[in-house]
Length: 258
Image 1 (cartoon, one colour):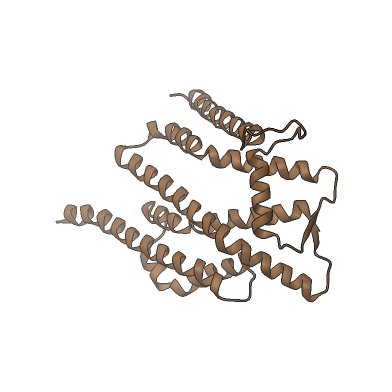
Image 2 (cartoon, one colour):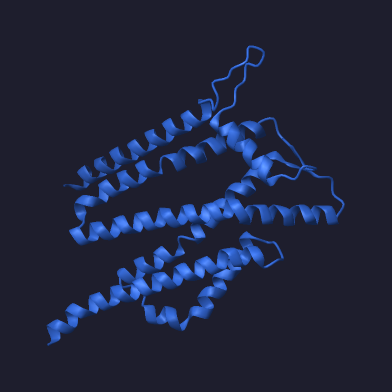
C-alpha cells in the first residue's frame, strides 16, 4: 500500500472510532434508565444523570453542598460525563479498529504480542479504575473535607470542580496500574534491560510511592498500601515475564554461536 492508501485506511479507522464514541455518547445522554414516566414530570433519569447522582451520593458527605458557579456548569458536567462514558463503552471498538490498522504490517508472533498488550493494558486500567472508585477517591474526598472542617469553611463546593477532581483521580489510578505493561513492552523492544530494573528497584518503587501519594493525599497508610502492594506484585510479575522474553531472545543467539 502507498502512503496515501495507508492514510486513507487510518482515516477510515478513526472515522469508525469517532462514530462509535458519538453514538455511545448520545445513547448514555438520552437513554432512560427506567420506562416509568410520569405525566407531571417531563424529565426522566438517563444513564448519565444516574452516574452523576451515584458519584454525588458516594463521594459527597451528607452535610456538604455543591453549587454551580456558572450557568453552564451543570451542562458542562453532563456533557463531560457523557463523553467519558461514551469513550469507555467504545473501548472494544477503539481497540479493534487500531488493531486492524496495524495488523497487516505485523508478523504472526507480533500480532500475538500486540493483542496481549492491548488485553493487559485495558485489564489493568479497569482494575486501577475500580480500585480508585472503591478506595482512593473516597479517601481523597475525606481528606479534603477534613481540611475544610479544620479551617471552619462552609461545606459548599464548586459543582464542576468536584466532578473534575473525581474524573482526574480515577483516570490517574487507571493509568498508574498500566505501568507494568510498559516494562514488558520496553524489554520486548530491547530498549530496557531487566538487569537495570532489578538493580534500581528501590528508586522505581520510590517514584511509584510519590505518584500514589499525589493521587491520594490521605495521611493514613491504608489506602496507599491498597494501591502500592498490588502494584508491586504486578510489577514483579512483569519483570519475571520480561526476563523470560530476554532468555527466549538470547537462546537463538547462543545456538547460532555453537
